[in-house]
Image 1 (cartoon, rainbow, N blue to C red):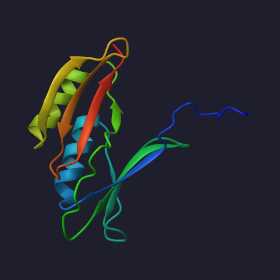
Image 2: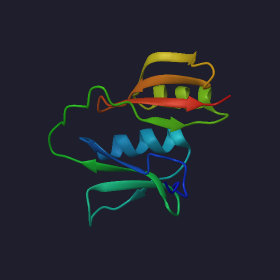
Image 3: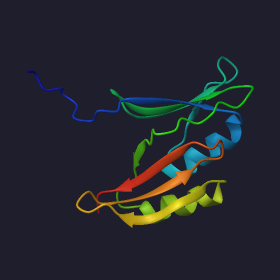
Image 4: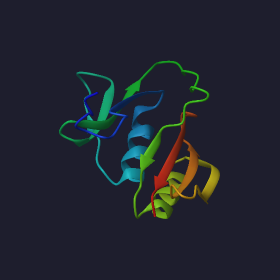
Length: 125
């Protein structure tokens, strides 16, 4: 069996949102990386971290989409987990599980974003 060149299994995530401006502010600030706003061509914004992928697209919808249950995407906040959690709070996120150990896999916090999606902020430290 041939092993993939990129060991990261998750390549991209499309996330439906009801308030694109609020979501852009939330994710840009939490990840300290600006999002590319595609308006007016498209009601979306993209955060692409590598040339080969590894990113997030926020897609504005006119009505709320029920957040998926049972799916918890992890976002890398290596070395800045506490800061990312604080920024999430400042931008309308709700901390459902504060930073806690996942020994031997590091630490995480579980956050609910302004649209109700659950995300994990993770650091291997």
